[in-house]
Image 1 (cartoon, rainbow, N blue to C red):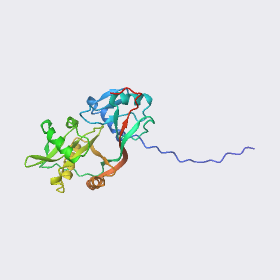
Image 2: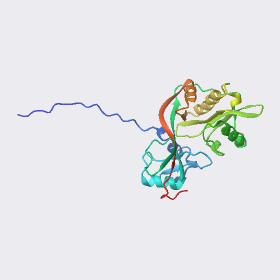
Image 3: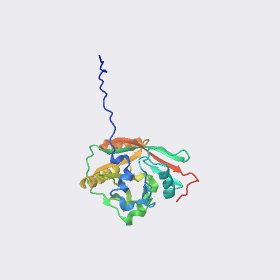
Image 4: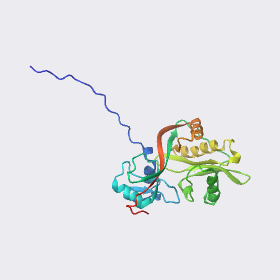
Length: 244
């Protein structure tokens, strides 16, 4: 006589499928922004005068961290990296952030917005220095379209495009001169930049600090939703590594 083992049914485990925005810098530098990529092994970065974004593999190994130090050290920006930093690296700065994606944005061109070009970069750098929206460097404008609003000839607000993973474009450098805050210029520029992105058949997304509650409320009111948390960190490579 045999006894059958009781039949049990175990619910299948669900694993979140990888998404192109999980590692947006890597997706951009191996995709639409490949012509910007500086590479060492499996590590890529943008030129230092374009943007500090660095692209690591999803699970970097010891050799990858040595390449990070050689390519970008000794102080390494780890923007959007949520993995584990090796114990012998010193994390010198860490800011919690969020990634937000278009979930009902109603884009619209803006009649007052003008496209900014290389000749406008000095004014753009000055506006960024006064408002501190995040990194904007002399060649950041090469990453995509930047729009601005001028008053009496002076640039008082701007927004534009940064990372470009396949099918997506990041909105970045959203800033407004304090003298015109409260007039809704940031909202208008976000919607205008989103309009250009949507016209290309792509989807807008953006990053901001988790503690920047005013910005998060604004983005949510425009139709963005939080997709995931992220981290903006800086780490110092150990002295045993040769560095850039």
